[in-house]
Length: 231
Image 1 (cartoon, rainbow, N blue to C red):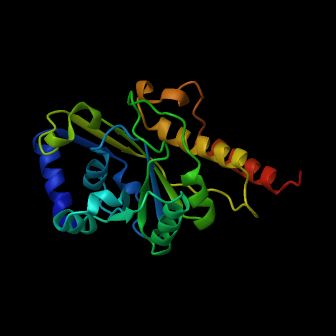
Image 2: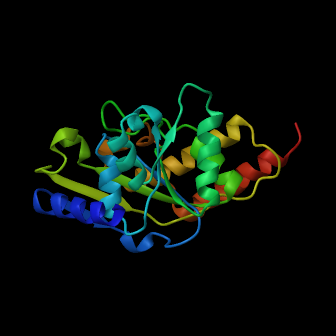
């Protein structure tokens, strides 16, 4: 059903809108993958599904699964239920389990939809997952999904753009990195997303000069050294 849903999404977004995807060839076909993207609307997950040939996994609140038909659809489309009444450890454990199965897990590092569609400060969860699993990270920039309500998803009547960047990975860090190091790595990951977005979507990362991949990797290695230095 996932493949059929992807084809239907491509048909709708392509016929009743203009879906433009760049960088589709950059998606690694195998191994654990963390897809990081900006979050402009509820339409982002189906847009990502339509944009990529690889099957994607998502984590959704358990309330979405309360009816049998909804439960069936969610599971068919690789949405995994999370009980949000507990602490954040539940989400981390679920994400680690999915990545251990070589899934491609979509994470929105901002943690919520941006109120004005521009990037807000990223949360350290995605960086923590990447360090723990050494999974490859794939940055993606999405624009256009905020221009129509979710009920009109089959008929977007607007241009949708998905810009897929180059995959990268974080360096190995011994021990548990502190929050400062995690936030530094998170900001680097967010800069990768910002590079894939128009200026007006870069938000808090617009003022930061987006560094090329080589410079970002060097900065990540410096963060790793800082984490390994005793205080």
